[in-house]
Amino acid sequence: MQAVGTEDLSVRIVIPARLASTRLAEKLLLSESGMPLIAHTYASAKTSRLAQQVTLAVDHEKLAQVAQQIRADWVMTDPQAASGTDRIAEVARRSPETDIFVNVQGDEPEIAGESIDRVIELLASNPQAMIATLATPIHSLKDLEDPACVKVVCSHDSMAMYFSRSVIPHRRDASGLSMAHLEQNVYLQHLGIYAYRRDFLLKLAQLPKSPLEQIEKLEQLRFLQAGYRISVGIVSHAARGIDTREDYDAFLARQKNRKS
Image (cartoon, rainbow, N blue to C red):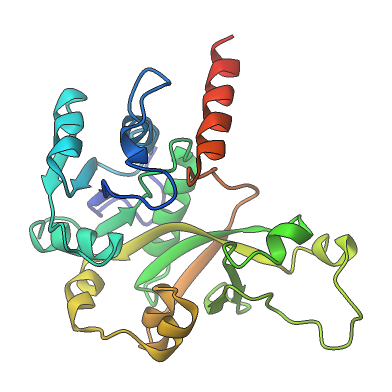
């Protein structure tokens, strides 16, 4: 059943697939589960009800070979592209028939189709927003204080106000944070899934890096500082991305448990 607001929209999921990876070499090709990691992500993205197409945006022949093996729709993108968003913009320029593009990270093999559909619905139902994304409550003090865990604060109408690697909001009058503070669900972790309107993606190349982006090393701050509104939906839990060997081993264990 099509969600309200999405009936007349053409939606494409794009999975930016970059061969090089810093902490786990060529992680998208790891195949100890029986299939490459990127193939798991592609299969999970295909469970979306609202997207008509899923495309792998690859930067290397090795990834193109995987795409061909799993019979995925794929395009070769510029190996020098600065980010996954730039790869999606490249696909958008070639796809005038598509209204909304969804960025699903290639290293999130357990992304839920429901989460993808939620971000599509958010953008479709918020005409003032050019971008939609998701967040989830932080339940761990360790995660809250980890700069790799990106935090977001939102307005009452669920628009992003700011993203940071620091703890935001900062408790000025408290001696320290405790689990009781986290139980209020005030602290939100930003999740790396986005839905973009095509019009925004076509303007992306004209947006210079912003001062806030350069300080925090967060691309979404470029969009905010340029005046674009980002709609944020809250979900109860996040898919687990694969950044390290430990992450991949944990993924393999979960796969094994599902099969047993």
